[in-house]
Length: 82
Image 1 (tube, rainbow, N blue to C red):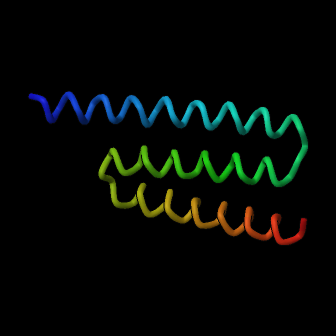
Image 2 (cartoon, rainbow, N blue to C red):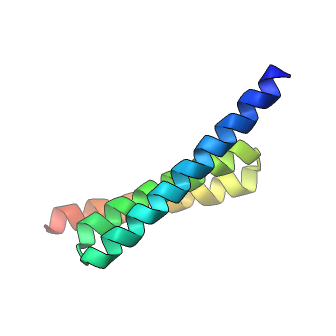
């Protein structure tokens, strides 16, 4: 029973983490600062990946991983340009 409770709690934490990152992204978008937006988007993508890992769905995990990589490349190029 404990493992199920731990898994459920972990999933709730990951969901809350994602919602927080999404709120930070909205704030960053309001500033118009491209680096801040890229950093916030990267954090959202990482949170989405954690959620996908909770499902164990290989296709979702692969999709989320790809989005993390794209967000990282975008962030890296923006930082280089700055």
